[in-house]
Length: 114
Length: 121
Image (cartoon, rainbow over all chains, first blue to last red; front, side, top):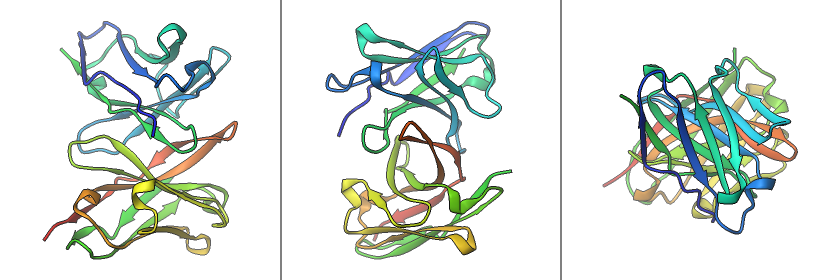
């Protein structure tokens, strides 16, 4: 059972950018993995945000602002969710996911917009 | 508009059974893989099971194999999860989710609001 590592918390101020990370286990190569990101606000179900494989292979969820984008850091075996122009409504839990043989989620990062 | 509405949750004793339902609308249900994903109180997300559009293939997380059964009724646009031999660690909100596919990889593009299952004596 692979484990995706996400920092438990992160914070940034309105208007700034937030960079949320998702580190894959050493036996799974981020370079050949699709990384999916979900947002969850208190009392609500998760919302699909986007997937990232490469700059030429990525996709945005329906209605998701372009402020949300994905990338990878191959040297750190990590997927990244970048949220630019932070707004108070972006305060939520964010989960990454991969699908090696079935869905595997990270533990989630609670993003606080100060 | 895609809608997924779960029902059937509640309080059940350890060792008991419960059947969850998910009513789907706004899309051609019979064309999609469907999943159940759960979230224990204050915890993260855990995929539980999924089922092929025609119901011929089903997959489960190891912790529920032999205890849970996923099924569907395409004529009624409904997804089910039969949960037997329930344990305290099965306590969670159970979400119904629609699967999408990219290059044989699946993800979840729509989620229901969930139904709470509490296993306690």
